[in-house]
Picture 1 (cartoon, one colour):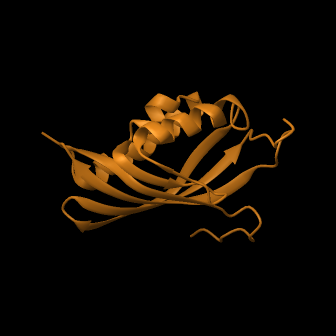
Picture 2 (tube, helix red, strand yellow):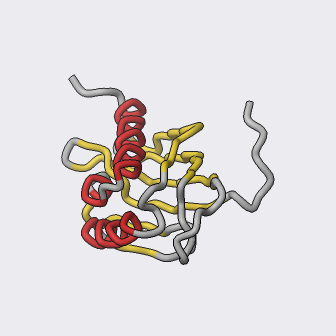
Length: 140
């Protein structure tokens, strides 16, 4: 018996954070559709699972090699039975700047469009926004 869509999507969020925190580019990229689009917090993009893996191999070997990211306030909205919009607030520690020096803790939001393909939910489009420079959001 399969999980309801919201629970299946929550599992993808958990697996994404776990892959990030293990710095495992292959596991990270496996959560994306083969033809996915990703835009990072700097506005740089990657298209396709293979390119997403390649970009993250480099990031996990450098600026994010000791980073830790946590998801908060995951909001899932089903658009159709096989399409969902997902917003995830995140916090990160351990990121490094271009010279290898520690960056302050960061927070942001991931915005995903997910599709159910071949029986599983995959990230089709991901936009990442860094909210660190903005006043904190008051949480309910």
